Figure 1: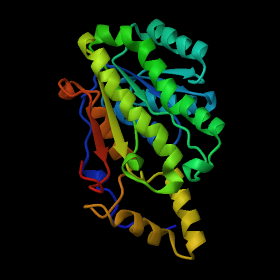
Figure 2: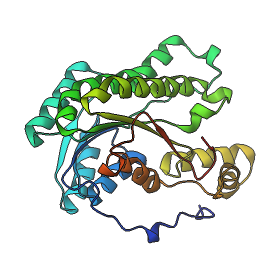
Figure 3: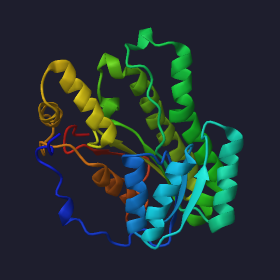
Figure 4: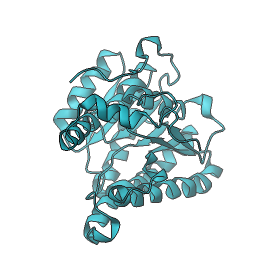
Length: 274
């Protein structure tokens, strides 16, 4: 596979210590955006709590964080399980004594069918990860976030702006997550806790690269053709990389965003103007 056209100008970025010694909890530390969020936060000076189901993957990411001179707590967690959620909070506070930001990045995708054709049990399962887990984690970390005047960030999606039938089940959960974030911003705001969302469009990382390969095989075209098709609606005529989405997200965790709450930041190279 060739390099994508109009690649991101990654060599122009230099990290600055926007998050020096802050403690950031990231759920959904897998490949792609979860990994980028973790590494970029460490490059900005943060200590990390890494939460996902796969301990082996977490250990590999933790090694990278430590190589950057930051502390990483590996916390294997099924975020759909209340006991494990409570244990995550307890372990975080035992290790660091503080929490400055919770990033709800974990997600699940329902069948890509029109919404009337998706079994309700499948939608319920997805919402356990995409809606109820972020709600409960935000509530459980709220006391610690109040003490630090911290924040919550929900990773949403530009699917909220689309009406394609195959994305309808995913849009249902992400739309609900957007409203949840708004409600939490209002409820937790008097306690000094900010709640914001970030909505990327297609992030050019491994999962979408594989998806583009599949689309190309179905259409009898090249990966680059699919990339150009997806990038054409954007102002920059390219797709954001995971590092770029991570950096925009982490701005909301920094003190530069101390008066920003209840917002959804769209990171899509100018595909949607909101």
